[in-house]
Image (cartoon, rainbow, N blue to C red; front, side, top):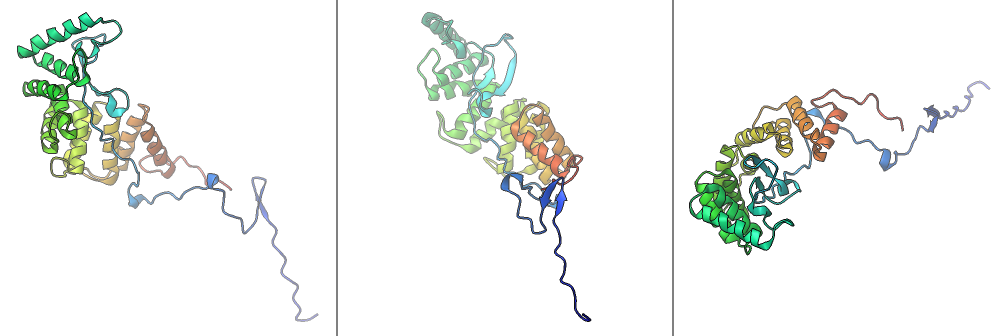
Length: 287
């Protein structure tokens, strides 16, 4: 009939990789949903808080006596103290009898009273852990201070730790910052990392992103994964250093290659959105 129009034909569904998808397809299930990437000018929005828990560091017996091992194990979830090879912290192990432990402690105390900085450091560690003597944090801080005043980096860091949390002394973040700075200047990698966090947060000093980047850089160059992550975050946000996504990704990669899970996740995201690295996502998933 003239003027009569046939009804519009209903569109048929289309297929994608042999899966039927209607034109009014429902939202994909949460497990398959892909979040939109951040815009490149947004900067990073990672919720990666620095691990600022401070811990004291004690001696450790190793196969190479005399070498310093600048690690604070408990800082990263492993042990509880600064490592500087010695005997005092191991006098209560399974191979030492009580008499051997007492003799080792007494010999260390004699050398400490004569002014030996290493013995003073070891003696402070013994008091801190209660190895061969009753645990006494006040005595620990007393002997660490004596060693710190002679320039012992491990004792300086431990003194900073005590002031930071109020262990054996009245809590004082300014005094903690002072001793942490002294240890960092001597190359103590954990002190350098903590000092960077202090400058970034303004703890015990005024906030200074340039100084934070400087000390994180020093610790990162010594291979500390947490410092590499913090430096990467500064590069990605442009705080204290020129914004540089390539350098940020490089820092995350260095930490990721050490097995750091947080860095591995961030580096994967860098590849997802192509920020600082080539974008490895070839095409959007078809759902």
